[in-house]
Length: 108
Image 1 (cartoon, rainbow, N blue to C red):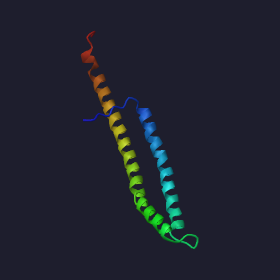
Image 2: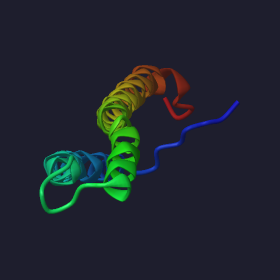
Image 3: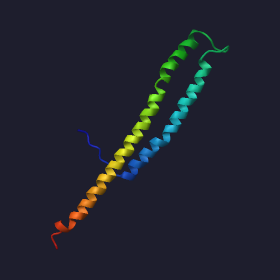
Image 4: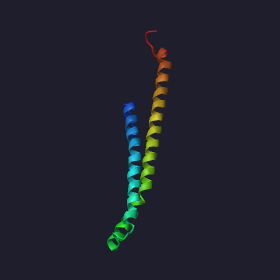
């Protein structure tokens, strides 16, 4: 079984924030490509077999845009929940350690 070890919660959160900050950039790039697809859909400037082939290929690729965006958003949620659960566990363990520290004190 794979283990996740978080050594620095602040650094882990910084990584999550970086991924989260990149998501709008990715979404904007995909939207820009969707807008650009209108230019290759067929016009007086470019019409023919190569234009149709490119547009068909583009449509196949565009089908991946939404799943990619959704996957990144889901991954961000997963990482945030992982961090939240880790911090809750760490807090609980520290509280239990404090609670039992008097019982374990050999000097008292």
